[in-house]
Length: 235
View 1 (cartoon, helix red, strand yellow):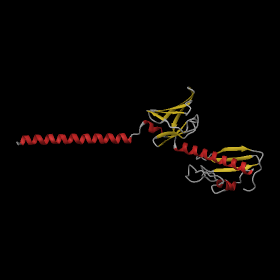
View 2 (cartoon, one colour):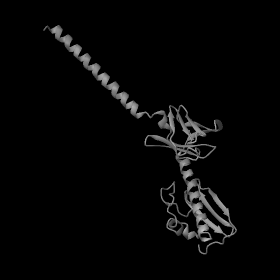
View 3 (cartoon, rainbow, N blue to C red):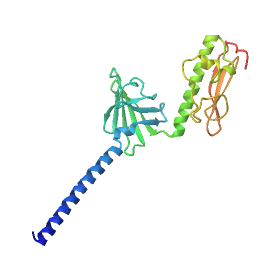
View 4 (cartoon, helix red, strand yellow):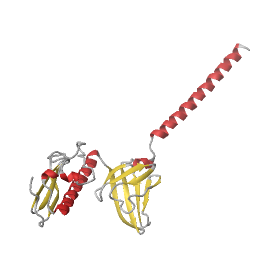
């Protein structure tokens, strides 16, 4: 074998090896790209807030997308059907359906709701921020607390004393549900004026629950006038 032939074979071998390496790199990069970039439907998952109805929480469970929010009501516990950039939710009786369409940047979406084939509402949603999500949970905590106070009133014929409305109080012991967590602190909410906590008061005119935002402003979420029952003795 001549020197020229040997040199030609070496060049061909190097070119073949380079081609194989290039193919492997392209395939590997393609696999990484396909696994690291979420599908359009994946980008629906998360909290979405609107100036219209309540927030919409879309979760993925067992490969299905479900609504855990307050907007989709009739079909709330059903699965979304994924159609590219769109999620479709149809109520069991097929009389109500919702179409959620994602924007190209995945930062907003449009939710259109239909009843009996007629459009009944359209709202623009934006992806929720940490502050919005915490504020929503704070509102839900106050709703929960007000419901427990009313349940106590029905059971005892009087409002619970302040000492009962605490994580370790009698109000908490009378319910099987866990005491709410302060969404700003990550600990059980307690009486106080810090964000996520509350101030509970009552009188012969009713009861009030005031909670405080991170900016320091207080807001009376619940002020229920109930003149009939007398307040429980104690503080």
